[in-house]
Image 1: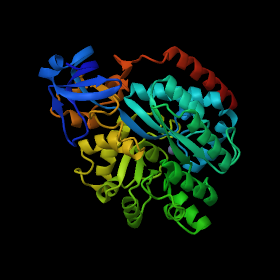
Image 2: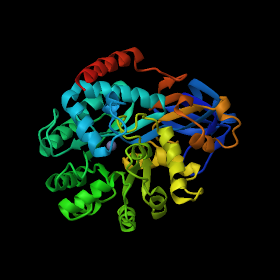
Image 3: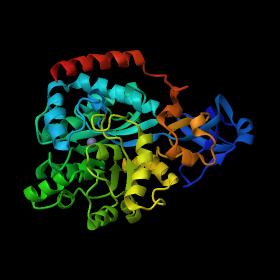
Length: 439
Ligand SMILES: [Zn+2]
């Protein structure tokens, strides 16, 4: 009888792999932070000597959600400026506020707030892009969460760095400093085609190849971005990145709203990933990403919240539902993005885009026990004929009852266990007052 640390006994297991599977009468055995196996419930207690058993009689357990694109520290600017076009929003509000306030402390406190929000909502891993990534990394570890930290690069100075070379060297130093932290991975994160020049992109392509790192970049978000690129560089942004050697399996193209058919084919041929952020695209009026066409072409599409300044909720359940609904609405075809596909996009496809598919994204033996439980014992989730359907069309983040990261319980009974909520409130209030008095 093997000893296991933890045995989860839920009503349903949605393992994501094999695709479309829902298991009943099974338990998940966890040991050393990893999934030891999925065992028939009848044998679980006799075949496993469990130190702890968590009975989840009205719950579904699935892999933790992967938020494929965010700027976590921007939670401190939630609701600061709404209802504006992207460039006015950036130039008139976000960038001035960042110039006035962004510091190591700001990023730490904002990221900690974001981690609290995301964990409570069932997100166990996020792909971040922001200044002072070392402060974000510290906050992620303090919250006992997992993240892909962006080695951010832009061609303008900030409180963090002076030029693209400085951004990259500081980011790579951060990567070295946190080497060995198995909850952290790193991406190269050039902000966007309109903030990064050719020379910087070429350097980033070299690093991406040498260090085998994903490249996380906003791409084809607005029509303006595309037409401006044609005016300035004589080419659309994707073609420009392709010329600079960045369009390959490591590319995580954020937004990808404005794509021509040949561009979708290029992304598919090169094995690229797209981070779809429907709320941000809707709120900023950017357009509707051609998700159904991307999936049909074979492009991997994960789901992101974007930062709290352009979405206001770091809630992947909202994005998950909107992904399914928008794709149907945009194509007039209710069969596109069915529930199991949407669930895979929000978990395994995001993990694969980040190069983490060997360790997270599905419930399989040997993977990290990054798991969430959703409580179906609520009137709004009754009756339940198909838990996968509910997870996409009916569940909200208020239904997340338990979250484990590497087998460690970080949310229990709907509350954080490793972070002090009062501390987060105090830190956030400090920044709210500072930003309000300078805005
Ligand atoms: Zn973004």
